Length: 486
View 1 (tube, rainbow, N blue to C red):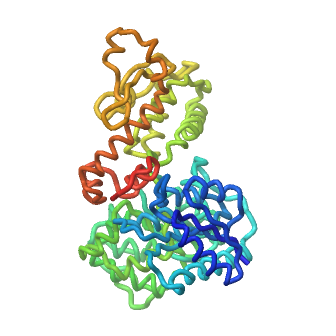
View 2: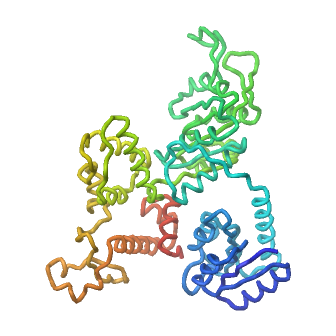
């Protein structure tokens, strides 16, 4: 018997679901609003939640990620009669098990439930014992990083080809090494192939090796990188740069683990595990004919998507502390203290270069600060200070007094700065409008994304083009602020 929660404002739907699911032998609870539903999730050990999209007090899709957080979190099945553009895509991206549109037959309603319960039974009955994961320099405790670490553990316990995606500087090679170091192949070699620097004339020789006399200058036999990875892991970095003509040959290597060195008569074999990484959109490249779809399928057995640093801002402080300590030891300078404002500026910045940019920034700060015992915003590079102070692209819109920012309601109910107050008019009568800067920033950000979605009529592609954000980042902001794509 499983425990099922129905979150739907339609009483008839709740009654029908209860009748069907109790008839299957399950225990059923129901909630008419999102607030009551989320309270029930926190208070009950549910296996599956059927969640409507349009609820009186919120959008169900925005709650999927919070419901599915945690190791034993319930599976979420979206069950809605609303025509919601990109609804299925958003639901799956946020972790939903399935997306069903009303009206639905009993079979359509119950099949996802049967599959979800079967999955949970297998997942928890064969749950591997917890083992400390080696995560050298993968710093952070955010839910996004925790999810990536879970995937690293899964990949390490298998031989499946694994594709790691993420923006430049997110640490894709660190994740690849973590897979290798936590796998049974940890004692074998970890061989890196940087596809972005391999020319078409040399790539075969570099990967496959060559026989003596295979070409001018080949004075002796050379072992290629694929053979060097025997017994270990072959890491194809920037796999999106692999020349198209070479992709077919490498596909065969993946299928058979055999290859022929340049100029050789006999084939050789190599027992390697493959991990690949890219910052490119390989499915889009495959659709455009610039990357072989059959190779993509082979690479994509497991997928780890590393979030950009701006999408896990709660890790910035821990990263800063770790690398400050690291570089203080490296350069033999005293450990540093930090002013609160220092972290404010660090967390305001968007870090377009991701963790790599943060590491370089911290190293630069430690070198320049030398014997200074405490780090202040003045130690930061100008672009970070300007961003934090409200310069081009900045998100601070006032200096405040360390307690809050005086604001008045804007046209759309959001805050706007009070010119009268800054001009010195009496503020005592309006002291209730003094709010913390974080609240002001959050509302300003929400107003921006509401305007973007209104201007683009809910079209996600147009909104991405306008905001210059990736689809995952945009969805994240919409989810945070409860903004519908309709």
